[in-house]
Image: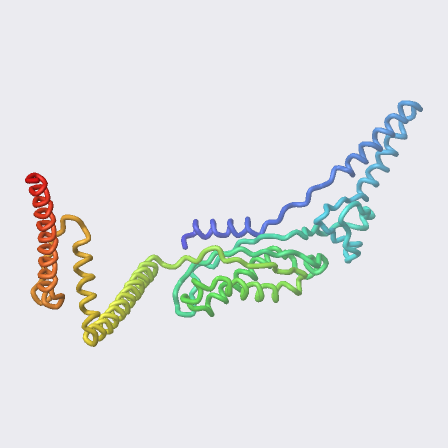
Length: 325
């Protein structure tokens, strides 16, 4: 990695571990201004200059004693350098000069993104893994008193845990098993941060980047696997079809009527379309006895013709007899 890229990565890491700053409430300043206004008005009414500085000092003391914490915040109050109490949320009071707020702790769920660049898997494959950590402070006292900078400590604990898990996992297990890796990371990071009063909610791996050459090799392997499965399916289908044909051949060999019905079905399928000419082989014609069928059809046509002729001659004779009469 070049110095420019390394500096950029460090900058991204600093942005990832930065927390939202504490927002100062305007109530102490309003209180100070109100005391100053009352003292000034009192001085104007009485004509004495002393009410203004007296009220200003009182307002400054009151404003310095007043603190306001948001609903999601806790304040760590130290008295003469020693831990005194955890205050908030809402309005609370401190003694100026004696007490001081050492840290404002945000107890909302925080997100920290962390990466592992060129980390080696168990089978010595370099990968780049990008993940997101969701955590929160459940004990503000431990988080402030036990760790100097707990957001940074959480970040580095997550990154080292990610490299540790990658080093114990095969690449073939890492790509399809992200849920398992997420749970392993959560357990490892939570075990490290629990003494600090920090709980890890979840870890989600966003992306796993492998070298381009390995991607091409895996693509070729996947394509070969798909072709292998396609050939196996095709061969299985051919075997099933051949087995069915063999069973049909055995049935036709044992039953002559079934063979003739199959032959007639073949002829029907060929002649059901209009204008279709079918050439029947001699062996198939013999099996169907088409000559006998043709003879029967011819005899039927002759019988119909003879019957029609006799009927016509009878009608003619009747007409002649009526004429002679």
